[in-house]
Length: 435
Image (cartoon, rainbow, N blue to C red):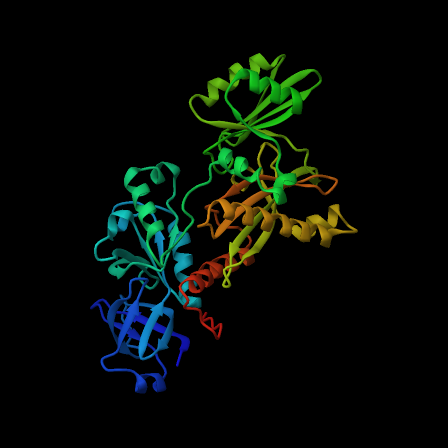
């Protein structure tokens, strides 16, 4: 007989694990009580109940499953980053938030690095967050059911030892790795071109490589964005516009847009090469976006796999350009607005349909990318919207930064845990959350 619920897991500094289980389950359980942990079924002696409070103890909600007198606990949710021991790198505030979401919804969350993996024993040197002491405690733990790749930079992800670790994790049975790595903009748009359901959303995108290709592309479109293939957060973006028989080039410098004017594309090319240097860039057809309160905006969408393993829209927010910026990124002067407010202002008679179109477009892009990269479970994307209501895909990010809207943030954290519960087959059938 299968029983599946959730209860409190307490890990003491001594190494003892206590789990809160119903009395009826305890009566029927073999003695001593032993649990199966992780995808490789590590065994661990378990003690029943809630031990007395100790400052250095770790406590989280955990899901449990009892079948044929065998107790399984989980899911084990591992955040993968880089760094030496407890000085690991990455967004620690984000890691703390994920830990708290695990505590609320039922998962043991810990941070680990490639150096901390014992491949032979299928264990890791993990770091559990203690919110009482505001510290990370080192514990040897079973390999997790789910590995959430939050390696913070492309440079770190390209290290040979990191790439080897990611490849090995990807090949491990019963382990879910998401997401495997950063997107490459050029590769991303090239792949999407073969998917009929999203072709209408793709601005023409080409590699920036030769003067001839650059001249042809700019002459055809007259409004072009240049983007670093491996860029993020708007860094390195340039904008080219043809107005009044002149070519205008804008780029960001110290949070402000610097504009240069040129009489011909040959001179534009020479100036660009000084700034691009050895970086790979793409050229992308510029789109004249709709404006809200006088400024153009992007539609930023977060999509994630949910507790059923299906793609869903977690939230949508509007990012409006700043007065001195060519991007909508908030640290560069952009501002945040609600989707419903902006859609009602611009599309009064069909704002609900526009919101549905945004959701449908984002899901179509997510499914198309997932067909190319099978280990995706979340992504954010920037969509452009014209005055006529046409949508365009500008960017997609496999490692989304946290959304500033509290409701989107809360749901995004919950979805991470629910998805982990789904793939580990350790869902809480009662849907209990503990605040």
